[in-house]
Length: 412
Ligand code: SF4
Image (cartoon, rainbow, N blue to C red):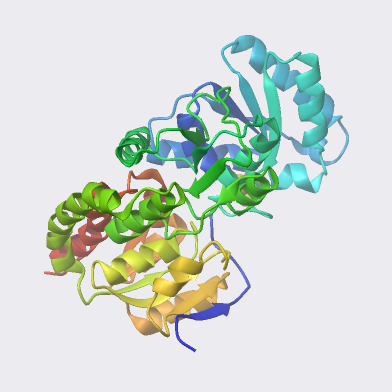
């Protein structure tokens, strides 16, 4: 059978939990607040992830469950109500409050959906309170976004309007550019989830065509289908080729004629080839191993192999939604090992045995690998960087050529 070799493994994992996605979600919706119901470990994780990656403004916090809560001696529900109300009094600009579950809140079976309903009632619609889980028992880091968006779906108004709904957080500038290009293709009714204001929720219904901007939104996509929307299957908008196919898929759904698609996208493709050329020089023939973390691994591997000439040693992914990823899978070279799940020890053994030129992995694994002389790229950086779209293909390639250049310099 042709195509990549799809494999699975399980065992000890080394990935960030879903709380991490708060770091980009809170930037997207400045009128929302993310209250993690968790332990001091959870608070430290968010603060260090946010502190490392961005200039963090206080749009998230942690309601600390202490030893008494965990031992079931105190009524954690009452404590949570008190913390949430104090927060909303202090911060009247908050319009949506996300109660984010964690490993500790799950262990003591704290019912956050009940808390969210109760608080919404008490606040009489002034603030919408919703809940989702970011616990490391249930989620890897990008799945936190899937949980947050899925929690908003019941609140989306209904509409039959013919429209394109872009689903998944993008950098605002990247989104503006993509919307501009869709407008040039005569697609003008375009909405986003998450919206830029948490109260500005898009309507959804049978006229809605959903185009996922990120591959990790499986639950959100299913719930949108349940609301009557059609979810397109396309390669994801990473790299020039993937972004072009992604835009073409939407354009065809809106019956834009092929000549117009070509006249808008072909000049961008030519520019992208020029931007990619110097990076391709560095990347061509180099061997890359992608460890599972962000679920961006398949689109990245496809881009690095097809447009940058890299050789794929192994492509890991924490989960593989075969239907949504069908087009990505079809574009990977025959025989490429695609490993769903993780047994971190076995995976590290394979990394060491295969001696790749570059490993994409979590922050926790990068330092030890670098110490062994293996160049690495943090997967979390890819989630924070504006890498989507044909225009960004050069920037995306640079994220991989830079560590290799650095490594070469250090080696001499
Ligand atoms: Fe750790 Fe779980 Fe808290 Fe995430 S949710 S920081 S995995 S304790």
